[in-house]
Image 1: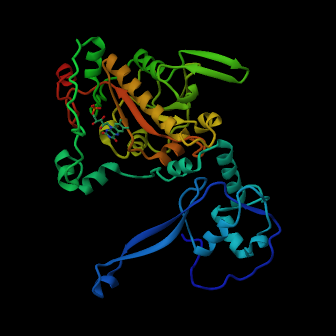
Image 2: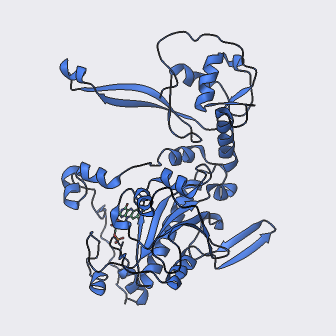
Image 3: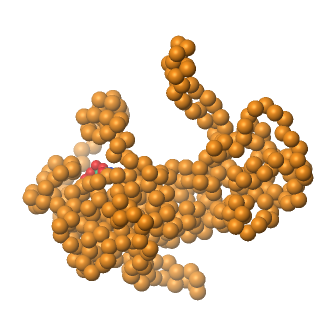
Length: 410
Ligand SMILES: Cc1cc2nc3c(=O)[nH]c(=O)nc-3n(C[C@H](O)[C@H](O)[C@H](O)COP(=O)(O)O)c2cc1C
C-alpha cells in the first residue's frame, strides 16, 4: 500500500508538529521497476506488459520495502539520523511528517506508548544498538522469505532436474576453470586414511526413515559435538569465550541451535533451543500448526527433508558478533561463513554415527522467526540443517556416484 499519491498536488500545510523528529538509522532508496500485465496494453497493440518506475525505501528495521514519492525521498535526504529537529526546519509539513512517521521512516522523539510511532522508534533503536553494517542490515532484512514454495518455483521454472536446468539455463561456466597459461605441476596422490573414508561417506541425505526412532544418546552426542561448548575461558565477570568443535569469527560463537525435534527417543516432539554451555534443551511453545506443516514451511516445502528426526535452524545472535565488529564491512560475512562450518561439522558427525544429514538455504526465515520467537533485528535464521536415520530406498536423488552410502544402506 503506497504511503503517497503522486497526483501532483502541492502538500497542504497542516498544524505545526509539537514533537521533534529524526530519520531512521539506515535507509537506502531503490528506483524499482514493476512490470504489470494490462489487457488494455495488449488490445492497443502492445505486448500487454506495462512497466513503471517508482522509488522504494529499504529500511531494515521495517517489515518490507516502502514505496515513497520523489518529494518524500528528498525530505528524507535532508533529515539526519542523529539530531532531533523540528519538521519545519527542513520544510516538512504536518501531513508529510504524519505519513513518514506512520511508515517508520521518520521517528518521533516522543510518542504514546504502544503507538505505531513508538514501535518504529524501538525497532530503530534496537538496530542502532546492534551495530549492523548498514549494507549488511539491508541485505539480510530484504532477502528473507515468507511462504515461498521453493519446490513449486523450480518445477514451474523447469529447473527441477539437471536436464531441465541445462535446457532452461543454457551451458554453465566450466566445473573447473582453465586459464591455460603454463603447464600444471602434477601432484602425487596419498594413501587414504579412515578420515578420507569418512569424508567419502558424507552425502546430503534426502531420504529419512520416519519408521525408526533416533536413540537419545545419538541425539545428544550430535548436539554436543556440533553445537556444544567443549570448555569455557572466562576473561572477566561478563566476558566468556566458548571453545567449540567449529571455528568462529572473533571466537564469539554467535550461532545458536533452534531445534524441531520430531522422532527422538524420550524427547517430546516440538520446538526447543539448545544451550551450548549447559548442554540442555529449553522447550519453546508449540507452533500454531501441526509440526509437519511447520517443518514443510520452514524448508520451503522440500518434502525430502521433512522426515528428518531432528531439524536445526542455525540462528545467529548478530549483535554478539557486531559487539566486537561494529558496523564492520566483514561482520555479516563472518557469521554466514560460520554457519557453513557448523553444517560441515554436523554432516561429518552424523556420517560418523551412521546417520544422514542435510543443509538447506531455501528457507522461510520470517516463518522461522515467528515460530521460534526470534527478534528479527538481533537474530535471524541463516540455514536449516537436519539429521537422522537414512531410509532403505532412495526416493529423492542423492549424489553418491562412488556408492559409498547407498551400498551400505540398501
Ligand atoms: C549452503 C547450502 C545450501 C543447500 N541448499 C540445499 C537445498 O535447498 N536443497 C537441497 O536439496 N540441497 C541443498 N544443499 C545440498 C546440495 O545440493 C549438495 O551439497 C550438493 O548437491 C552436493 O551433494 P553432496 O552434499 O551429497 O556432496 C545445500 C548445500 C549447501 C552447502
